[in-house]
Length: 57
Image (cartoon, rainbow, N blue to C red; front, side, top):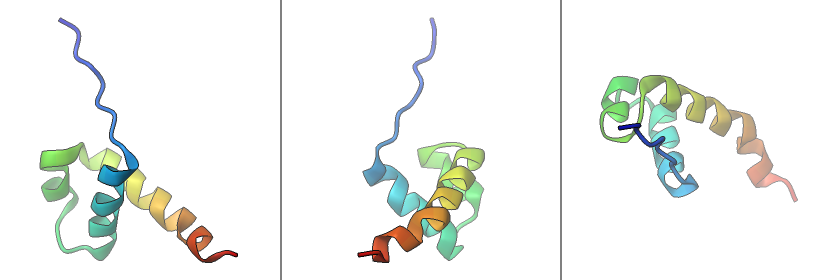
């Protein structure tokens, strides 16, 4: 049986990415219930790259 790909919404990604930026937990600890450590790193980089856009306007 083929495994389905998990699709995480923004409401799931944002708190995990924020926790990764804070550094309170390791990537492995965050990834255990949510996703893989590599995916957590990608979400963290996306958050940091786009954070300034929140304050424009």
